[in-house]
Length: 417
Image (cartoon, rainbow, N blue to C red; front, side, top):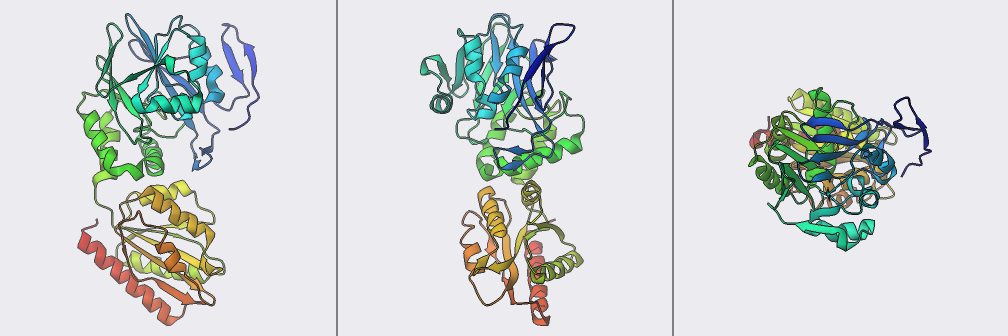
């Protein structure tokens, strides 16, 4: 967690501003009727969970719903931003319910602080999330009410319906559907890591890339389960999708159609080629193969693992038909950066159908065997590797041409476009 130095002052209206926190502090903003967007915009965040690059920052969205009889807060923010959320709740005299859609700390971290402010409030969550919230945040089990899939909560003139959506991206996750306003509060489902003052999506191109990065990095491993979850939420009449990261979708079809493409469409006529080169031999092979593939009408996305944004690689893997790994041999095996790239691909489980390995070695090694053993999750056919002893020569380039032709043939047979 990043260290924060917090100072406070009051402006002419008496409201509290939080200075020294990289982000934007603002009052709750109306979505519709008595539904409000709260939370924190973190413009300066550049790494999420000490793992995921955040080139556009991120937001932590919470939602307040004021019914005619009951008031509910859906999700919270990271622990370090709890004072911002508490100030946004300053005018809320009574909170009846706090809903936790997902137990991960970026949404649940401020729950203890909110419950301390509103001791009469009950915490509502899924059955599986109950133990997680107790373990992660030390919340008393007496404060927690669990709800089943499809169960409803009356707020008087408004009704929340809870929809179990496991593995988007933890096993306990659920969504909440506000029937009267047709709003789906989807938590991580359909989210995007992006900091923007826009409540709703305005720049679709920018949000599309951010959402695809988000999908690639945390959702792609659960493809088959997520398809079923999409069918569940599509059974509802949706006017707005309100995720817990990024802007809201006033056109739900924009993000739903994108997810359907990323999940269910065939892979593209594309080769993703992550590589690293120590003394130029592997780079020479990579350049030749790229040129040969492009001449055959195949799109290639190239990633030098010494300098690349690993999130960009994850985005490219979503649609890849073939993955080719380029590596020199280091101490009888692949370069450590390539090992990380292979581990990432295995964890993300993209829908690629084929994989191959190219590279160089000095005196021997087991590069192919090691890398092949690292990708058991990938349901791929391994195409003939091309490894050269030292700098590539004429026969090595011929072998690369054969590999290029094999990739072209396989893509045609699969109908990749």
